[in-house]
Image (cartoon, rainbow, N blue to C red; front, side, top):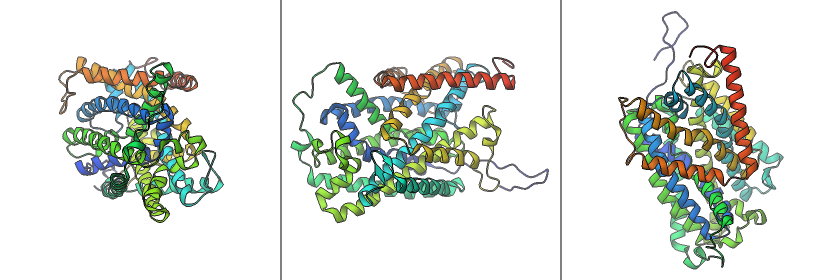
Length: 465
């Protein structure tokens, strides 16, 4: 590829360099990053004991059929932007699809940086084990703030390069993540005590309204841990043989990570009594529970070295997240649905550098929020438009575009769509009312912004329908 300033110079374009291994590594690095290492105490607090693991199972039963939805849409429409493209095409690119794509972009500019920021928050929590004082009352101190800024800028710098180099770097980070998970699993196999792991409280299985609300809280924590199985779909323009690579990477990463999560959760809860980390607001060690786990098993020396590996996984997760989310404003700008400046590619390295910088800097700002606020808000915003909306888009595409090439089709259609859709709505209904109200207000605000944007540009519903 050549570039230049003359009239005949070729414009920079994206390169299809991501194969199955780096694509799967990208998804898994995202999923296995900060998630399981920072949410275990949050999960256990949801129902007050090991019964909270039922919420994690509910999350898996939602994520697996939802992964099939992503696999079909990603294989059929392998372009940058992922959900933005699926909603636009599914609901009609000249009418309602414009609104749905715009609403997704609005929520993504909030939920995307929030999800990346959760990795930075996890990094600070474990850094506090090595360097006490970077976190206080769940938020960064001034020292922690400097770390967040340096870390966020460092992740942006790692991604400021060609996609082929990013793919190789992804595999390296992924390898570190696997080593960290392997360390937890091996240690857990040695120290596991079923009496500790299954120490249920007396009223563990009292099924009532409070149990249902707690189950919803546990499920959304589990879903947060699974987020990322679809990350490769945002980079469809940069994936080799996307009709095969995207479905395989999505489903493989989901199954493998689900197995690893079972092992990690049992390893930790079978060694560290849950009563010592629940509620997490009263137990400082809950913020770095895996370090506590390793300290109990091997002593403080090895625990410190292992904490460094956990920090590695947090960086790998943030790296994978920012890589995927930086492609979405770019895709929207290329479709004429966002500011044109976000549609620019780096003239020599051929990646959306403006979008990368914007999303990366927003993520740094979001890292100064409390983790509970981050988790609930990003899950609420994703459910409203993205996850439920994509199910609707797939149904509409099956109905109105039956001749579309579909290298992968959802198995047992439409049953997985009903399971995933019902699960997402259950989780949304158990969110705190103030979070539901915020999500609804954000979407109404997005509709108002869209109407203003459409009227200013004389687009549908005020212009070219």
